[in-house]
Image (cartoon, rainbow, N blue to C red; front, side):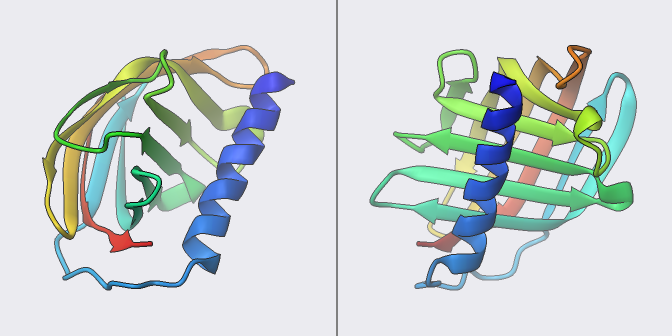
Amino acid sequence: MKKLVLLFSMAALCTLTFNSCKKSTVAAKTSASASLKFNGTPFAFTAMTASYSKSNDVIQIVGRGNSSSNIYLIVTGGVKVGTFDIATGAASATFSASASLQDSYMGATGTVTITSFTSNTVAGTFQFSGDNQAGATGVVTEGKFQCSYTNQ
């Protein structure tokens, strides 16, 4: 139940952030994409949204793919080129294979690595494992992303 509440909280935060904040800077267009393997099956995301809050030093990255699949990545505090541990809370990651909550896996262990962070773009890699609300474990490997972001 705790994971379900946290999952809903993260989804609500992402939705609120991307839909209600004033866009102070519109980033230049870049090739936006993300990809990963979930339990060995490849997924691709071309509808990307990212937002950086300089005052909170938090970046949120959301990728939407076919069949209602989504990837949510958040790096909190000290956003820069580097590796951020999910287990310690320096980052969080959730993968949804479909619109069903049974297909949503919240990262418990793993990392998000930012390999490039410019004034309007972010790129990196990620890998993690986590459980869905039924307790099944899923493993995300070979994750990578690149996109423009807006400043909040």
